[in-house]
Length: 136
Image 1 (cartoon, rainbow, N blue to C red):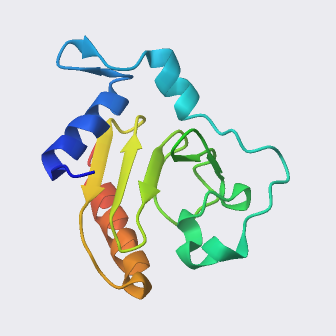
Image 2: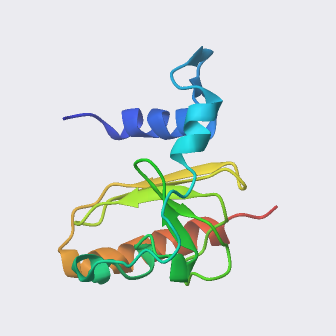
Image 3: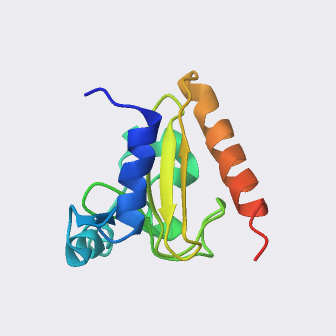
């Protein structure tokens, strides 16, 4: 699959809008709500294979779960990464990341390619920069 950063931003905006973009519905608001709701059962163990992603793992201990295609934040206060309960996101192994925060009415996308060992640094940096820029 090949696309552009602009297309990705339009996709994220559609999700933030509850499935609507430029007057057309691509998903119903109910579908978007279902996709971005935590579906992990209580007591779900997190695989050792994903431990390198730190606070971005959809870990109940860090106030996160997993919806249909996205990690979702269930609790705003148990994660070292800035964000809001209700946000949803995904991150790539080589540093790319996006998130949608309905509470703050924002989307954020970072398209970088860095060694796996450096991705967490840049993801943390962009989150801090975005949330520190909010003035309301």
